[in-house]
View 1 (tube, rainbow, N blue to C red):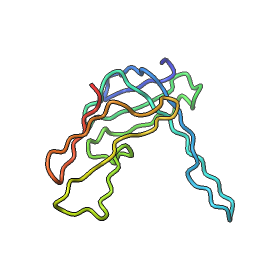
View 2: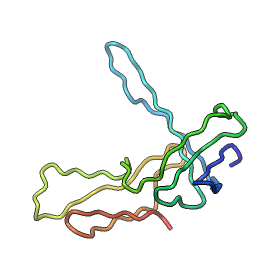
View 3: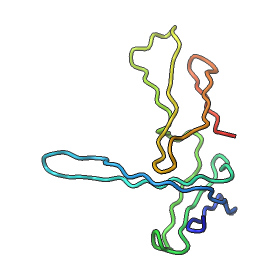
Length: 129
């Protein structure tokens, strides 16, 4: 996908697919204040290492100005909307359950995640191979 340039540290990472989602974030009736979120999802061909700086650019300038870039750090402890855990009402001795899943707009549902319970307090997830 030539529209995107993704850098992990100083290495270029190829984009396999791109997805888009638009959804209402906030819509009170009074006063009228509709706020819409636009989300871009990039499926990369190679995984990003933990604690690596990731930068996304649009060199052609067709999607956003060419001098803009979006930068973040791949933090393994970051918050993820893909994991849902409800702790309210859990008895300490009973098993715990969590849901793993996320809708990626035009890319469909996030697939290939497996969750495993290591202890009564730790949940690990492993991304698709």
